[in-house]
Image (cartoon, rainbow, N blue to C red; front, side):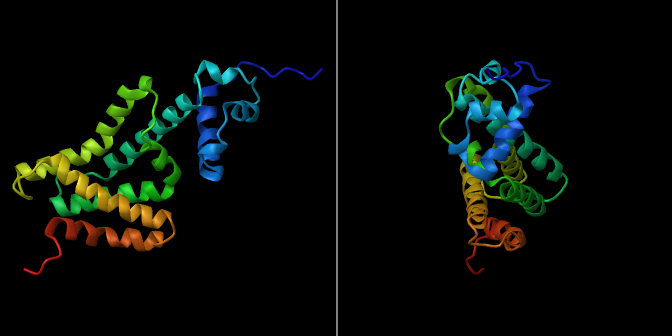
Length: 197
């Protein structure tokens, strides 16, 4: 009879999340399995159930880890004393670096499928990240640095361009270095357009 696996583990939740992120990065979302993660952690197959009721709960928790990291990256890059263009360029560069380093995690963060139980946490996480960019745009609008418009719409346009650049780099259609070097130009064109003056 095989020896039973222990149920207890020092910090099983963190161990499972770290292992899940490695699996996501190397094998993709379909390879994620609570049973397999339990085996890797050396615990019983039932042990992850104390932390994640199912695979979706694990995915939601992993997405929240991603939002926490993105928030840290954006906060570290932000300097409210800068004029809008260099401030937005620094934030865009931080976002792109995150997107390049954590492409699979970012895709999971933006997935539309989340457990209703995680809705409030996801909404708060989006507000701390994407919402922070919207607040930068709204602040620039109040200072007269950009046109009067709906800050959410302007942030959507800005974010779409930036995320598109990140997607091209993640898909290998653009070298990561080239994408990072393009950030200043992208932000400049978003702020001033490409029409001759």
